[in-house]
Length: 362
View 1 (cartoon, one colour):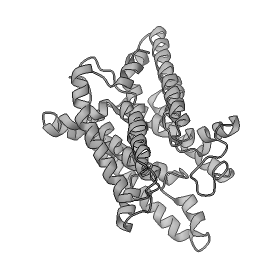
View 2 (tube, one colour; view 1 turned 45 degrees about the vertical axis):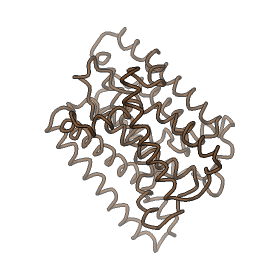
View 3 (cartoon, one colour; view 1 turned 120 degrees about the vertical axis):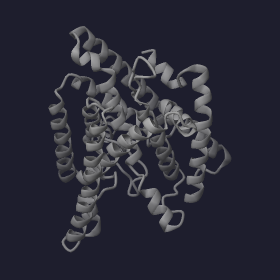
């Protein structure tokens, strides 16, 4: 939700907005499925297909945020100390803004909020603006290693109820920090690695076809190999561990966010972003792109409203906890379609989404 601040539309990488738009769709489907308690409330094939989105759309968002930070601080990396201070001040103000929005959603009952985690990523990322590109890759690897060690040394279940639906001591200082850094929905360790890798990715020549092609091959390879290796490791370890232990160590689900999940989701996220850059170049004059891209430019607004308006309407109608997976996916698709229709009209009139406009004032 941190975007490249190019001076003109010609300079803007609209493929990033396309990736945001598709990630908005995936995020809506995942969140509505969880909010309605519909993880398994449908045919097994549909539940399996919907489960593939878990932790993937969010990874795309976080990686895009890192890319956006690198693009908007290009001059700060090369300019004087005053430019660096100005950029850091702007980023930290925006981090505070996202923190307040996230806390507001948490107080409204949305326990799966990502914005307060985003705030931490932005704040920490502001210290890495002038880090060498190689150092960003070292940071990424270090975060993954530290997070994996943390999962082995600490009890990931601490704070959660047995069903992993409610974080029991979230509003205590210890619980809040534990959730933020270790075992929340998108904890700093290891999710900040997606952001830092995005910062590195944002320094590449993303308009260069050769760079995109190499990046796509590598990201797809990492995603495929991590899934295949994780499957083999789980299968080989089951005779020595129970299925739960094997899944904990070698799973590719976002909770717990183990090494294989991070590699798989990271490879998938990078591939989606690079494919969207390709697609946007080829579809930039099409009606499809004209519908999809504005929703990506209003990703922050849609994130807030899909909770307040989308879930609020269901609660008002008494249909929030219906447990039907087909209904959750259908409702999410309908909400996204409405978002597509409204986004273009709003941007044509006002230029930016309401929450994006407020953030740009900082």
